[in-house]
View 1 (tube, rainbow, N blue to C red):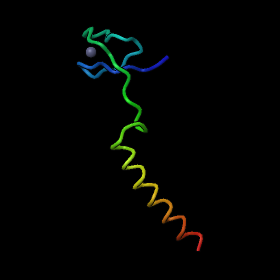
View 2: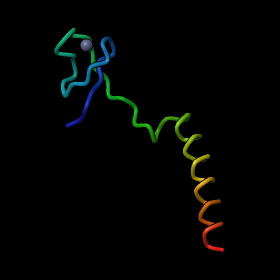
View 3: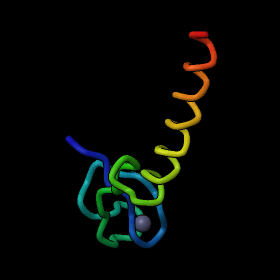
Length: 57
Ligand SMILES: [Zn+2]
């Protein structure tokens, strides 16, 4: 079972077609596979590592 997002109205549905406007619903790309997010995450991870290093001193 997976969540789909309507490509037209943006509503979430379990079906492959939006029950509201009948447009095809697509699986939203998981954030962890988004390049933009990956870049944000690596930035955050560096901050976290830095913080952990400071705490361990
Ligand atoms: Zn829709």
